Length: 375
View 1 (cartoon, rainbow, N blue to C red):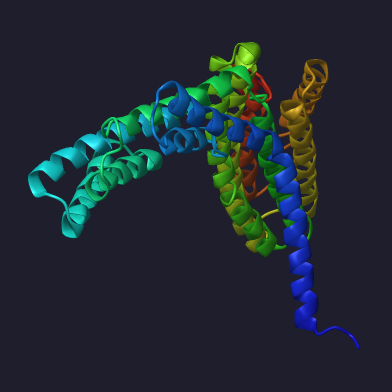
View 2: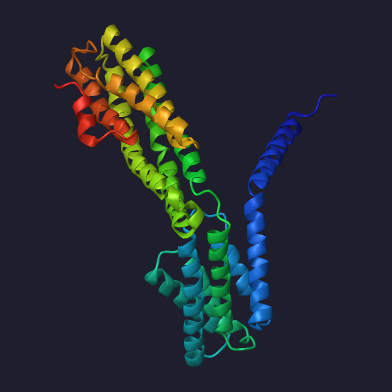
């Protein structure tokens, strides 16, 4: 008998989940080993060297500080240490004034969370401050006084920083992966616009606009990874030589972000131009060719920015700059056989996007503008 459709779908779902989980676990093996060694080492140091009894906060703070988050580790270490210390101070003061009990714990926790949000926007800082103040009210102080927990948190943070400095991961790995995803999406936006023109399909142009809007989380994620990678490159002596490359990638991201914003403006205008039949057949074909060629140049730019080897990286970037220069030289309504005003607007809106891409590829701002044909 054939399996039921619902059972078959569930089996496929479970297989995908297992496959995805195995890939994620394999990619996380090295960070997991680092986190385990760091947490156990911080716990052992606090217990056997400092003499603290059950220093759980040494292990937990090291795990929080390392973690799998894209946030900079130094910030997380500071948030854990300060949040833990301030939480104990707030909890002790309110315990002295209000006494111990359930309603007192509720008041202490509410006040601590609001105080943390007033002082800083960090989620870890708020969690640590609230948790510590609550523990002070609900649990007896550990041997050595309540501030032993604060010392344990600092120990865990210091161990996390030592792991970051002594056993760092390549800080360029995540930004390279992020920029590859980002430029892939930009290339697909341009290809969807080209296809929308070729088939006179305004709905597809609108889909390209939506796709461009959905790229903003990728931009934000890359900015976070660049901040964290810059911190690693600053702290770890083995990777300080890559600081310049990370700075260049951050500059490229600014221009890519602008190009994505301009692509959304362009796609919106293109939707209107298609609906109003503002372009002749010749102009439609010429602009579609420009969009397709630009998407190919974006792919070349992606290979350059994501490449590991410097020589190959520079080669791809040179090719991308040459391709973008050639395309930019065609961006004039007359050269593209555009006659009507609304069609000219489509070309005019594409010119700033091309300047952004040229700058992302390393071309000087003034030179990028001069490449465009004068109007």
